[in-house]
Image 1 (cartoon, rainbow, N blue to C red):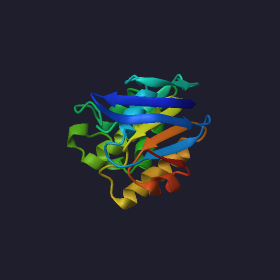
Image 2: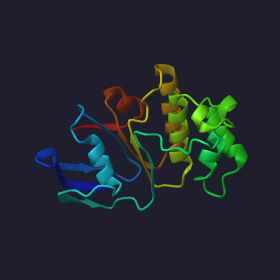
Image 3: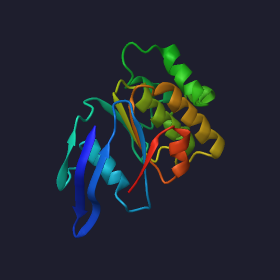
Image 4: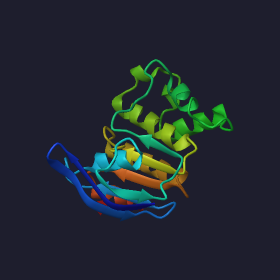
Length: 187
């Protein structure tokens, strides 16, 4: 994917100014920077949710999944159902359970999402994005609400299950790029 000279203003404030990034197919980048620098806006542009004021994106993946800053999960559904509703038909219930178990949710997969802690909801949202059949995964601050040990475990899960897929993560932490074996892009 080629991002060339992307710029974006909101009212009179320029949040992105001629951003150019090259991401090889299957590549990994972590976009970092201070709050208000346009990280989420750039991610929204990559997903086609927001239009840039200028610039172009070439060879964007046709199929992608996302983890937003908000979990965006149906609260009445169980964790298993939240993940299962987006999984390809070839994914079995045993495989869904394995993914949730890898994320430390063994005892919580049948509970309604509204009963889960914030960190558990984040892990369900991450699982949903990874289990979907996308060529790229976009994640906006996916580790918010996770303690250090859980974060490392989630990153190991991402590393195991995202091989060959393009991964673009927005994060405030430069350490995330190292843990994900990703290139850090500061904006």
